[in-house]
Length: 136
Image (cartoon, rainbow, N blue to C red):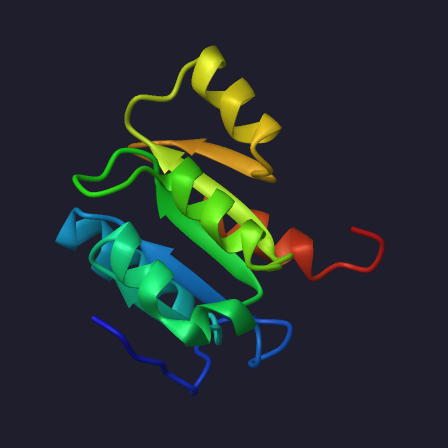
């Protein structure tokens, strides 16, 4: 599901902020996509980490929200691939298998936030919103 939605329903701080979403669970991916679009973000969604890495437009994104465990490649590997290409955006890892070891690995790999599933949409919105505040 690749796409954008430009009409904000919520309180996005700027509509040109692009968020990449990758989760192999269609329901999670769709709900994140719809919620972030409703808040005015430009959202690109991917069914797999490989699909995200194959998209040359991903390099222009501001933020990544990605699942840790996916069938093709894990979220940490995707972030490492983006960083190797020079991408410097903010990154959020989401996982149903979150524990202290994964959180430490994610932070060491460059993730700004780690959110455990089932997560509350508000946690993702607040994390992304904090990236838009001056000084962060």
